[in-house]
Image 1: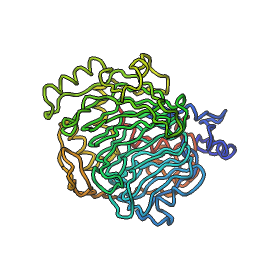
Image 2 (image 1 turned 90 degrees about the horizontal axis):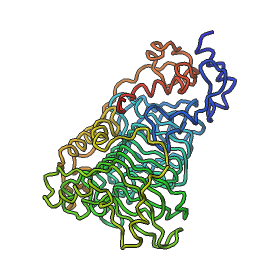
Image 3 (image 1 turned 45 degrees about the vertical axis):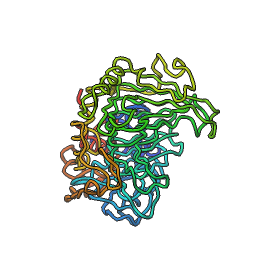
Length: 492
């Protein structure tokens, strides 16, 4: 019997299982446990085994409008049940209000967009649901007179099984990328850049990178560049009141041209800082925090923690790059000292606890780190692969070049300097994202006809996208989507 036909029959008999952890193998002898299969090749960390919309319906975005009509991204996101969103158009989606994912079991496959890809503008893209995969989406928010301070992308409502991969986030009026109080969460291979330092935030100057945390959360291989502060701020257990559950991995991130306290807080929890690459830039050189890996805080007792609760931190293999021409010889010597002993990069705020209670000599067992690299190797790979790099836009190209050279190109129109900006027009605004004609997909299963023919599938059968015919681990649709971007991870 034809393998695809057999797989289709298996799916029909066991369709209720396809949306959960159990799926069907090539010959259908027994279900395969998707909870042991990475979300896609290259997925890593606490959110590694997220299943998203695997085996569910397919919704195709055909319009860049944001009125919620059929064919729009908002319409597809608002559907229920396991589903995968693919794109038949590229360009800027000018959001009319915040775009919220409230219904889980979802995969958003930005890499399927023809042409230059998708960019969200004006408002926050927020993930408020369980079991969500988001890949190759740009969220460049900007300043809209209808809004107050907000994030380019966030997710903070105690959800679980989320992985965000190869996305680009910038031009926020609060933080660019804020994710905390989630369980089994990963943010990986993203470019997080140019939060707006003096824009419309109700507190005034507020150009921040992100607030990070979670009850099993991994942040790895991300580039944070040109933020005045919060690179990142660790949320701690301020809102949960459960410091024993707050467990966060930060590894192989690249942090460039940071300022003020840089990374700080962590009021309760266990944290690994492993093989991250810090590169002070021109703005960093003007701040005393250029040599800090982290500034630890104790809770003030105003939230759910008791006053004095603080995090415990493990540091190893973190590297501070002394090559920026704006650094003095004295500043460079301070960086060498941190490289010799990472403990010198920790500042304990107000001496709330002795160092031996804040520093851990042993690594915390939090999540898998299959992609862990030495810091200098990670630096090269992050600059090569991070962000929405299937079609890297002019903004990300510039950010990467500035990071490589230790320089900046623009200053802000409201007084910000040394690479910090205040509004998108300071850097020329949004680039044009050209679209091309989407490849024919006769049966609407998310796989182009020509690709189906090449792989022995039927371009007139809408059911074969959910079949595990080409792989025992991924549906045929997933095999197609993954094939577009598998090369955007370091090859072992």
